Length: 212
Image (cartoon, rainbow, N blue to C red; front, side, top):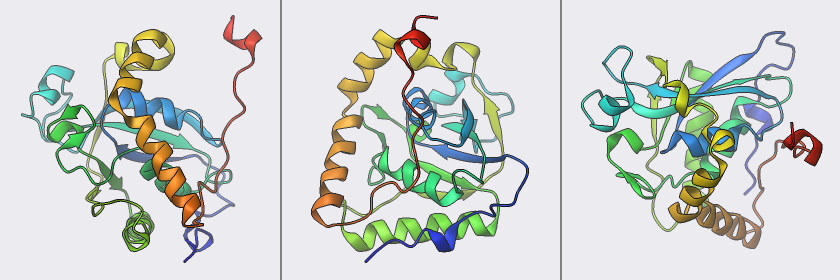
């Protein structure tokens, strides 16, 4: 069965940018992943869905605020649709883990999609159901679909962490097992002849750009 993303596309005639909100464990990783998607203009790491206003990192990871580490994705719906962002999100997390993500445990690291309207909710529900129907994972997808309530940007030192602290970030990411799972899911989809990410990725930076 093919996943019909065409029925889930955002309007292509919208002149404005849109925002999407995802929680996928460590925001350093999920921010870096979404920076690669064509049509994504900005990704901000932060905290979403809790009750404490302007929470700090220490408060969030203590589990006392109800917030999750999350990202705010600003994107051009004429280039990438909301449904494609949801599809990409699921490919870069472990949606079967109800206790956190990889080495990071606790509610603040659990995965969630924060939908802002009924159309976004339906897109997320449809893709989540499709993943379960296709048996891509050994366990059911448990990522929560929650109504968006708030998002607070994280401290400056968390923003663009992968870019600013490349060595530490790469060591952390490799040890986490996130990329290993992503590769396994890709293999399973290929074996089952299921569609991979239908959007586009940005061209990798050139050597000259990296030296600036």
